[in-house]
Structures are given as C-alpha cells and as structure tokens.
Image 1 (cartoon, each protein chain N blue to C red):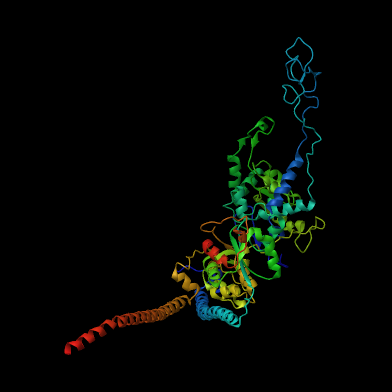
Image 2: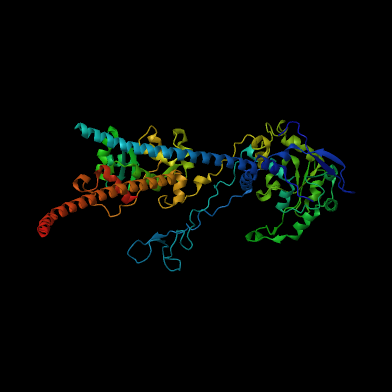
Length: 398
Length: 239
C-alpha cells in the first residue's frame, strides 16, 4: 500500500506477426489486492446458489388416499391402511415416509430459500482477490491451465483483438500467443456427464479454458463463442463464478489493452476510489509485508529482543543423588568441611582414648600398689615366728 | 565454489546467545562463583561446629553452677520443633485439616520444622491427635536436610544436590550452603521463615519397628502429641 507506488510494467502483445512487446502498461492496483481464498470461497458458494431453479415434490404426493389406522387388536402395525377391498392396494400401509407409496419425510417445498444475499463489499472483495490471483502464475497453473508457453502473465494483448469477427481468426490468435494448449486440453477432456444430468440436456462436461476480457465488443464475442472452453467477458461485468470457477482462484485470463487499463478505474486503488463502484476502495491487506521470517530475523526486531532464556538444565532434569551419609563425595560437595570435621573428631577421639588410657593405667597401678602393700603387711605378721627361732639360737651358744 | 551463507544466518550467529565465547565467559564466571561458595561453606561450617560445641558446654556449665549454688537452672524453652504427621487423610475434621494444610503436612509421614511460639503452640494443640512432634537436636536437623532435604525451586521439588542451589535462592538472606541452612533452622535465626519455606516438606518413611498405637498420646504409651527429645530417635527410624 505504498503511496505513488512504483508499479510493475506489463507488456502488451500484438495479435499476429511476432510475439514481442509492442507497448508497456503499468499493472493496475487490483493485482496487488490481498488474495483471500477464504473470502472467495464464501462468496462463491453463496453466489453459486443464485442461479438455482426451484424444485419440489408434489404437494399431494403420497397423500391421495383415505387411509385410516385399523387400531390395536388386529395383530398388525398401527400405521394407516388403505380402505376398501377388491384390490391389492387395500389394507396396504399409507401416508408414512416408511410406507411404500407414502409421502416422503418433510416433503420439499418451493418456498425453500434458494438464493443468497451477499454483502456488496464482500462480493467486490472476492472479485478483487480473484483478479489478483489471475496474475499469479503458480495459482493459474495449479488451477490446471496450460500456461507454460505464454510470453507473460498477466497476458495483455492489443485492442485489435476486440475487432475479430471470425472464429478462424480467434483460433489463429490463440495459437499464436501460446494459449491454444489450454483449449486443446478442453477439447481433449470433453466427456459425457456422469449422472442423470446427461439426459437432462446437460450431456457433456467441459473444462474451463482461457477467458478473454474486453472493453468493447466489436465482434470478439462471436469470434470466440464457438471455441470450446473459451469464455468472453466485458471488463465492466466480471463474474466471480467465472474468475474463480469452483471457488478455485487463478483463471487464465487474456486481457485486451483497454480492458486492462480500465481495471484501474473500475476497481480503484487504496488512495483513489473506484469510478464505477461508488465509495469503493481496494481492500487493504492485514499484513503489508508477509515475509514473517524476514521480519523476525531483521535487525530492527532482533536488537530489541531480550536474550533467550537458557533452558535451566541444572533444575531441568530430575537429579539423582546418593545418600551423603553413604557416599563421601556427595557429602563433601555439600559440606566441604566434613572431611576436616571427621579428622578432628578422629584426633579428639584418639586424644581422649589416650587420656583415658593414662587414667585407667594410673588407677590400675595404684590398685596394684595398694594390693602389694597389703600383701607385705600380711607377710610382716607372719615374720613374728622368726623371733622364737632367734632365742633358740642363743641357747645353742651357751 | 564455496556455498554462500545467507546474511540472516551470519547475523544470527553473531548475535547468538550460545556462541562459543559467550559460553566460555559464562562458564568461567560460574566456576569462580562455585569456588567462592565452597570456601565460604568451609569457613562457616567450621564456625558453626565451634558454636554448637560452645552451646553444649555452656548448658552444662550453667547446670553445674546452679547445682553448686543449690538452686535449679531452668533451660530456655525450645524454639524449634519438628512435626511428623502420623495419621492419614481420611476422616479429618475441618479445623485440624486446615491447620495441617497450613503447616504443609498434607500426607502421612510428612514432616516440617516449625518455630515454637504461642500461636504455633495453639495450632499444635488442635492437631495433636494427628501428629507427633518434639525438639530435634543438631544431628537430626542435619540428617533430615542432608538426606531428605528437597528444595522448592520453580514450584518444583528438587533434591538439594549442591550448594549452588541454596546460593541461588537464599543468597540474599546470607545462607549460601547446607551448613548455613542447618544453622538457620536449628537456631531459628532471623531468616528462619525463608530457610524453612525453601525446604519442601520432608517425606519420611514409616518407622522401622512400627508404632505402638497412634490413637493414644505419647504420654499414654501411644504415639501422638509432644514427645520432646524422643523425636530424635523416631526420626532416626523414619529417615
């Protein structure tokens, strides 16, 4: 949606002679309208209902009997039964949707809502999207058109095309420009319709070929009329059902030069309204720059982002850990003082042990000493008998 | 012909949070911090050992002094209790249920530390039939935190496997290692609240050797209620 945008240039081709650019025209703003398949689908499904013809089942179908239920007690179902006798029909079930020859469930009525209202702006939005899609080669190809040999898409051709009158000329032109392959496809794939339409005056089914859009009909309509698959349309009345058949965007369109130029007036731009659709501006896209990846990776965005939070692996996994009272390495990791503590405890224990040993030894020694002295005292008491022996020794001397 | 690297990728690599230089720098910083924490842990553990020993000795001294004088030494009332829930969750009336929830005793054999004051004692009174509690000593507190200590980290229960974990959460309260945590809990320091809420409620095993009867109070040869210092032997059986 740039102001005074530098619009791309599209070549205009002649209708015979050599396939080369005779002129260049700017691309109308419509081709930059947002391509919205959802809008196109919605509008198309509703628009397609608008050419339906009413149909219904006869109002009297299945009701043209005077059947009455026989009631209970007759060992038959209670469904209304045809009165009378003398014919196979009598006593048969009637009226119900389950009955043979009865009326259907919810008989179709003509006053069913056949047509759909669609908001004008929505319709215009869809058409703009569909036109924009016709310039996108991948979309046109995916729709199934054979556009490989075309000089350019969108394909714009000189206004002389509008003055063609003969079908032969038209075919020659299509071959010249490289569009005939699409027509060949249509011819090749013409088939008998599957289903009952074939005997309801809709016998054959054709693909869609190129669509020729003109500004003035100077014979072009009749020239292209008989070519299978080819449709013509005035640029003033472009139909979504033809631009996106089956709500599939990307119809192959051949524009005449004046028709192409008129698109700018008919659909307007974001600054200038349409000249023909009062108050209509081209729909605005939600995103102007849809390259999301590029936006995210741009400097302007990346420099403002905070750093990516690291996946906190330390708290991420379920951490298994051994019992610190069994595994020394775990204990030391949690309490680096532990080994020193054990050592000190050990030293203290040893010191205490030593002290205790000394005390014990000392007391034991004291006890033994006491024991020894008490033995000596006993011995001293026994020494009293020795004195008697001394007297005897004296008497011997005399 | 070398492959051209897209400019966006070049820029991304330059800006990358995970580039080699940045990683290296971060790692170095972290290693330095870990070393600091461990040296602090060593020094503080040493300090606390002395402190606990002094406390014990002081107590003994005061008692002896009192005996000499012929009077009594009344020990200061305990500040810390360890509560263990010994009844299940079925059939608990609303008031005790709420109190047990508030104390984080949401399942049987779960245990928490609590500071004792008038309010908490009243709370304990209500939940007496569902819990047993007492006054843990240093070794019990240590064993619980070392063996069964889990931290509440990012609303998750994670086993404390390094001092870094404690540092990250409790550094602003000057608690950087296991021994700091133990000290804070045991002595019910200024930041007891934060140290205690850092710890997830302890999940203990059923006691080896079993209970006598949980229906009776400890005083009546049962198991529930206040069992003062005998909580230490129970925790040894349940840890």
